[in-house]
Image (cartoon, rainbow, N blue to C red; front, side, top):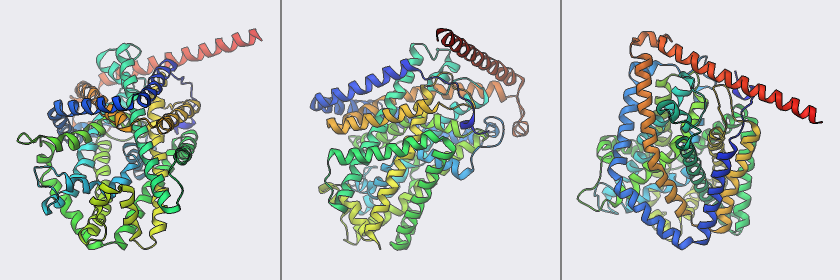
Length: 554
């Protein structure tokens, strides 16, 4: 049954919402008033965090890759997440969580990420050399594919199991931590976890929205001459937010599913156009070579701490990326849980890691190698333009080289807007679910709650743009808040392993594949479902009493 069509009696957690919004808006005010001081503080705290925790972060990412692969191909991979058939086709399902995990700035980095690695390469390679150019695309693929999606998958699968298999109530980080540790979701630990999650989601989405608005406005200004002002940025943000609000309001099936499919197909067709009308042979050859180099150096890249150097590359690139993905991981986990009912653990893990990675290999392989080809042949000096004029100018020059270059720039902007709206919809769902009391399988946050968060997630970026608050400070704060999420994800993983041993350790693989359950799991499911039903009955009774009280008052 469609979740969006089910009666919904879920209420918003007003205390959590009020506290989180108060902190967010006070932070924006403080950033605008003390901009210089905040920038200096952010630089110090970011340097300290990425330096001190460099090795643990690298080990965490590598552990995610190993654990996810091991779990997917173990007997536990056959465990089905919930009853019934999957709600969405495989392609729509993969498209939705790709859009949940990637911001629209992916389009920007698709042309330019290699240039940064060319100028500041890893593995102690000399900068601006043929060797640096050779490893530039492999490093992009390394930072955007297997490890990133493994972090997402590690965070997601324990939430999926808790919600769909164990039938624990509540689709939030605090709820799953309660089911593992016993710390109440409504207690100080649970409140702190959900508050940290909301603040991180606001920070990450604000960064993505503001950067997209700035990129969009700069390219639009180059195309039309429209000045790059606050009003132009505000119109773009509001337009994206209207799309986001409409998608969120109509529900997952009519909104997010269609929007994500539209974006992914559009990006794929855009990439194919660049491939066929660009240097196709060079793009194909260097993409294959880059994937090979990434795999052959995967362990070295994953564990490169640079002990004989200053560690700058590891700190500013690899560790930064892993923390960025980790900051988004809880939100992605909640969204993946919502759309993965009826799938097996193996399907979820492989679809996330291989599906997400394959999309990035194709997209970055085409876009970056098209950009590199123009650099090698002296047509567009991408690194120099990037350093002196900005990435938007480099993208405009690259797109102008294609047949119908001006039209391609308009299409690029249109895809960027829809991409961002779909991404905001996914994040908005995660935020709404966290602020919905006692959400259970088969329920979604109410439409009013979703619309409320649509408005809030729009106001914060507008406030940032209007007040000219330093974006780098919020970026640093978001990265630093990812460090506690590593601990939370590891606790989730510990709980998952414990549950799997309790629920399925004694069952052979063929019985799990047939859908058999242990007596222990059956008792737990019955107990949790009974508790949920009691809560629903209590809510219904309270609703009737309130209605009766209102009638008597009238």
